[in-house]
Image (cartoon, rainbow, N blue to C red):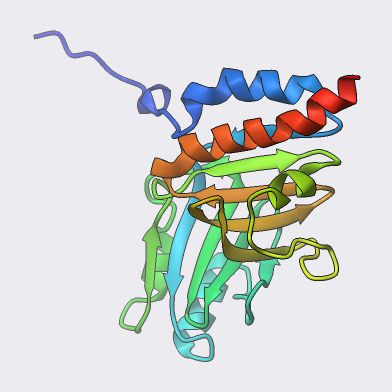
Length: 207
């Protein structure tokens, strides 16, 4: 029997990979106005712990990032490892600077050994869709129920909300860039919705 060695990395298919061409075409219409792309395979780690306890301290030491302490708060580096507040004892650690690998969360898991809390790899649970451009907020406002005005939703803020009928996490990175975290099964709908919503602004820019 001939054994075939597969590079598992080449076999990975992201939830929105089948729409990469469509995203490229839509983004090329008027890139200064609106662009959309997927950020595939970023590490996403679900954390559960009491924020005032020893578990939180151990997780913070393992991550090298403090845990956020209020709704909307994001700690760390938005271009690298950062932590999003989901509830008083629930957080999502995200690293967009590299692709998720097996064993990435071992250090966080070990930091909770014998302590109440949880660290679990959720990288396959959601994908990340990044929307950028000068009209990105207006695109989102077509279907997002949250108030996205910068006075209310400044850079470095993330909340759980909805886009159309899709529940997701929305993170305003800054510089008119938003990251949307839909569950993998909603990636197709989310991307198609964004491409359709972008059309009004990108077509107008070409006139």
